[in-house]
Length: 183
Image: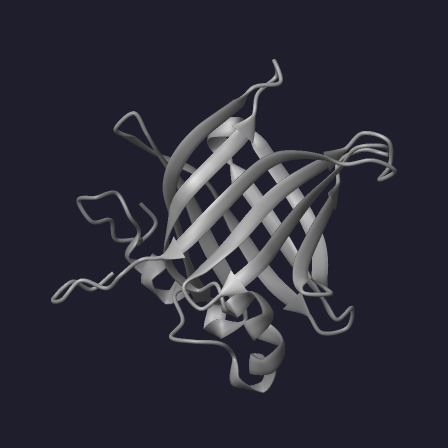
């Protein structure tokens, strides 16, 4: 096994070096745009547009933390549907100092999807866009941020951004810390 030590859970011991205790200090102000979402959140309400035009409701969890010396953020989205906990996917976000923008890469093995986004603050919202094809664009919007909640939505355009369709919406609420439990 090339010197890598495995635990019984199948995780490489080195993965612990991915975590960071907080944002990289020289970039802290810029990193806090998405850093404000670091923590544990309940997806109190989620709905997704289905192919037949109906909406499917669900609930879940969102967990985000600092990684790579505090220069990036990784999050995990989980669905709790019908008693089944499914890791929907993970996103890695990092700030590009030269572009003064955020790069985000969403990976969802369950959906066989990888999307690369670029974005920043637009007005009161945070908007990340992914150009899937010449005409198809996916936009993620973080909005209505309060100390203990925020909203998120995904929009798609198939005409190069002339018109947009909301395909997902979520309300996320900060999880209450339980005494004696380290999340």
